[in-house]
Length: 622
Image (cartoon, rainbow, N blue to C red; front, side):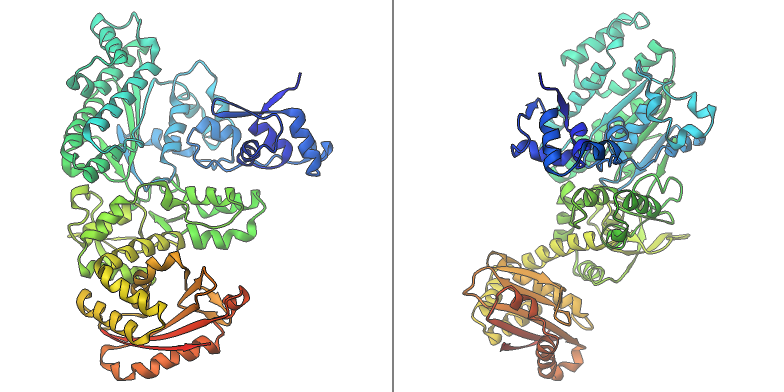
C-alpha cells in the first residue's frame, strides 16, 4: 500500500516550496494526490517519480540542504518555527519580563508581525501538557538565563484576536465577539468541572458555552475568565489581545462607533484594570483610542508606538535580518530591490522593512509587487481622500513627488478625528504605515513635530492609486470624457481646453507647482482609459524615462507618449516653446523604442507645458 505524505515533506523531496506542491496537487500534476479536509496528501511514490523527472537524484535529495519556505499568511508561532523560515524575535519575551509592565499596548501598522508575536508569547508562557520548550531551545531567549527559562510554560493564558471583526452592523460584530469569547472559554475546558470553582462560576462557564449569557454578562467575560483560571491553577493569568481596535475602526466606517466603544470599554477594563488575577497583559492595534476613555482609569497602561525607541526591532524586519534572508535564499543580489520596494520605515531610530511584503517577495520568486496594499481594507484611506482640504491634497501630491511634509504628531488620534485637519490626517497615516518619519521627531513644549515621507515604492503606488481616484472624482465625468475624446481623436486643441477648464474650476492654486503635480493630475484624468490602453508612468525607454505612455491593447489604436514641462505662472509666454521642447525630447531620447519593439507602428507624441493654470499642448506623429 502506498505511503501518503504531506506537502511539507513533499516539498523537501522536490526542492520546491510547500505552496508550489499545493499548486501541483490542484493542477493534477502529482498523480493520486487527495484533499483531506484543507490539507493535501500525496503518494510518496508519485513524488519520488516526479523528483526523478525533475532531475533530482536520491543522493541529491539526501545531501541537499532543505530550504524552508517563507511564512506568508501563517501566524502560528509553532507552525512557523517548525516548517518555515523564522526571523527570531524571541528577545521580545525578555524585554517584557524585565520591564514588569502590567499592561502594554503595541501600536503598529497592519501585517507587521503583531499576531505572530502574540502567538509566540502564548506558546512561551502558557501552561501546556506538551513540552513547548522545544520551540525555543534554539532561539535567542533560551540563552538569556534560567530566570527566563523558568517562566516558560508557567502561566494560564487568555488569547483573543479581533482582527477578523469586519462586519457591517453592530449586531453582527457583537455576535462575532461573543463567538470569540465563547471559543476562548471552550479552550479552557478544565474549568467546566473544576473543584476549585464555586457553583456560580461553573454555571457561568456552562452558560457561556451554550450561548445563554446576557449582554451585561458577556461584557464581564474577561474579568470572569481570569478569576476562574487564577482560582483553578492558583496562579495569575496573562491576557493577550490581538488587533483590539479592528472592530472600533469598523464601527467608525459603518456607523456603530459609539456602540462598539461602549462595549469594548467595559470588556477591556474588566480584564485589565485593578484585576488581582492578572499577571500582565499585552495588546496590539493601530491606534491607542485613549481619548475615548476606552482604557478609563487604566493607569498601568504603557503604550509603545512607531515613534518609540524601545521594542523598535521586534515588529518588522531589520536590515540585517533581510540580508540574512537574502543569503539564505541565494538572492543576496536582490537586496537593493528589496530596499527600494519594502524598506524605508523608521521605528524609533531603526530602519525597518515591511515583513509581510518581504516574505511575499521571496515567496513570489523575487518578483516585486504591491503585496501589503491587498491585505486590508483601504476604506480609511478613501475616507481621508474624500474629506481632505485642497491644502492637504497638495501636500499629499508633494509627498508623491518625493518631498517631505512637516506636521505635529498626535499618537492618540482617534477615528472620528482622522479627517479633521492635516495634523490628524498625517498622524493617522504615520501610525497606519502610509508615512514614516524622515528623522527622529522633535519634542517641544507644544507637542511632537516631525518631517514625514512616503516609506518606499510599494506605498508610493498606493498613493498614486488613491489620489488619482480623488482627482477623477473632483474632475467629474464631463472633463474626463473630454480628455479621453481629445486623445482618441488626436485633437490637441480639445485636450488643451479640457485641461485648462479642469485647472481653472477644480484646483485652487497652481503657482510654483512642480511637474509631478501636473503629472499626477493627468494620470487621474486618463485613468479610465485602461480598457483600451496599458498606462505606464515614469518608465525607462530608449535613452531616458518618459512621463506617461499609453500602449494600445488593440492594433487599430495608436500608441501615445506624453512629456511634461513646467514653468512659473509668470512665464506663461514661453509655453509654446516648452511644448515643442517636450516633443523634441521624446524623439531625441527615443522614448518610443520599447513600444516599437512590441509591434506598435503608429505613435502620437504630446508635448504638454504648464505654467500656473495655463497649458499648451502640441502634437506630432512619429
